[in-house]
Image 1: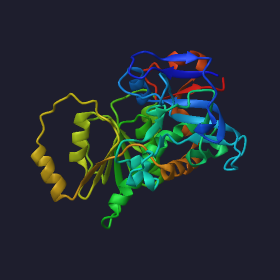
Image 2: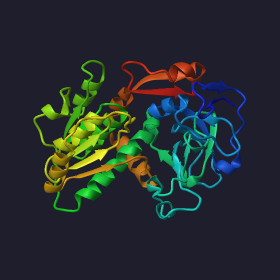
Image 3: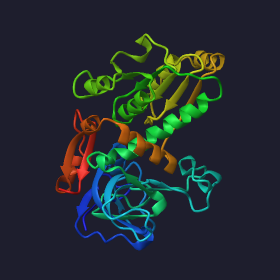
Length: 348
């Protein structure tokens, strides 16, 4: 069958093969026909050789962690043939650590987890894949065109879950949220914020393309000026760029008892002249919290599926700016200037 693979650690080793073996039953009881996989910056970094780890005993790694498929067979009865399904990306470590032992594998403490298409597990960019029932997330049929958005939405669902947990430390009634970055994560964070009835502000440097309209169609306000120039003190900031200067400005911008959630990952290697003492003073005296969030556990995937099913489906469709057939895989993994989300289509 077809599969899109790389040799981890070897730059530009991306290949499409027609001779990849069928998924072994050890991978899971549920057999799935791939419909599509979403592509994100993590895939680009793996292709560049920055990281990635093939399954034990294999030289190549099948890419793809943003999955969508249709069930072919499920002898466990968890799902029915024809059901839409996505596969949970991260699996708990085999030891397991205390968090993995209770299903919170997104908070793994020893780093021995595995991840489809990233670390030690074959990904979903292949014609057929298998999944264990506890890692198979059924989707509403209405999500057939946009189901690849479930994985990034699960990341955002976790972020909001933890924001609300932290907020419950006191009498907390948030009104406004600032989201920095209008990529897929930022736009989906804005969607979940709007579903919570908050006053939503999204900041991005793009003045053209689809992003401003997508933000405004949520009833949110779109900004292009620097964070420090915004005339607001949000109760929550969800930082999605990873740009060091934006991260620091976001910490300074949040209001008293505010919460800053960092979801963007910085590349490192940049030094910024910054008054860390003033930031420390503000965080302490205003009871602010800054925390990082990545990945998601099964509960967050289920929350994400519910959020997507409630959303305006035409709006979700607009996030997918390119659908590329597998035969043109190289084009799919080449970034476009105004792309939001690119999908590799296995059904074409």
